[in-house]
Image (cartoon, rainbow, N blue to C red):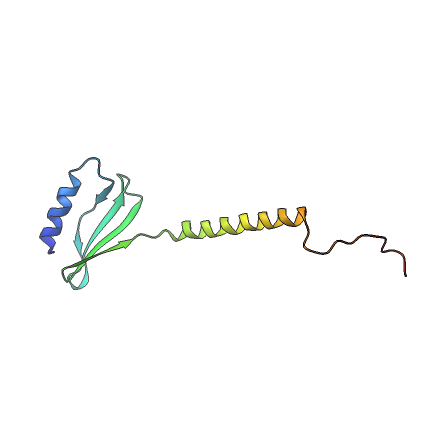
Length: 105
């Protein structure tokens, strides 16, 4: 796929008003590589990723939100800690100690 064919495909996709993705202006970077940005919906703030066309081969590179992934990890850790705390309050992992421990035997 050359650059002109890629632009024709993009032009055809942009005419659909109900498209779930919007393709940005294709631009050429180093070594003849063409990059086509893609956003989710009509909101340009939410990037979906880019199509990279190099040597006639197209590949998809998704946009990764590292902050969102980190927040999900923190949330999973907090929920796990809360469940562990609740389990320890209900039934402590240490053995049951019954009787009077103040008297010497």
